[in-house]
Image 1 (tube, rainbow, N blue to C red):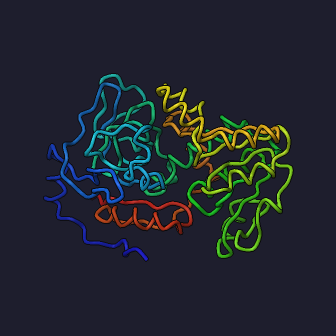
Image 2 (image 1 turned 60 degrees about the horizontal axis):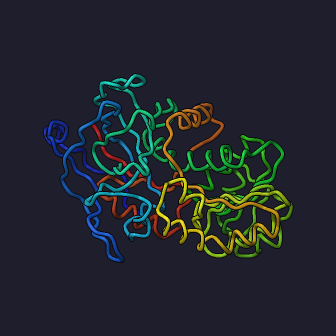
Length: 358
């Protein structure tokens, strides 16, 4: 179990020193590899561009990709200048606004994703483009808000934008107790879909409480032997689950994968070179063949930050129709331990890091 959240409040003069200094504390990645160099460092506070906000960060939501990036697996796709600040999801308060900013002002509480923008969130301050930020829902605290951006945007872009999920359609969302699953199930129900999911025995009631119509205990049953005639599969688990899911779809059904394999369309959309486009085509050749044979489609989704979509998600949260699900909250000083905990794959919902502020 992670440590208790209670900790001594820093002395006012120390906090003030942090806020007036040109430096800040951040969790940084200095080297890729099997033993990546990750740790806290003093780095320069961001200097904002005309279209950016300087945000004092109150909480950072963690995601599985935060543990994958340091291995170097995404080096051809995600461009970082090392040492790089880790993380992407945040919630905090606007301290400065760029000269071209029109939608936010100093003092606004916001939440945002910085994914794929080359800078990170596990820091005392962050530069946030206006286009990716949204006002924090009033009924959420900073920890709850920070848990949302990546899982919310991923679910929205997969279910609503890519798959155009309609009322009455059937969607399979595996790993229902995880970060993506806990949000995607709720969003799919708001879209009027019928939802099936998988989880372990101890999490069945949680997944049902989120709205899943059919919950399969993966330790006792194989989903591909139970489910049939589905319109959509949200690929959220690794291994051979994506290939097995082809068989549960009706003709014309869709697989939207969040875990790969990457495909040619993704490479072309990011304007990658011929070699990478060819390699990704090879990687996805098997699943593409299986999909074509069954008259279904396969595509890989790489989430993008989007403030307007996050604003729509915020409205669902503010209305109470979707609720954050948080497993554990770690103090800022233990962000590395929070990543280690997340890597175990046992979290029910999200893992969040919280910065103590006066």
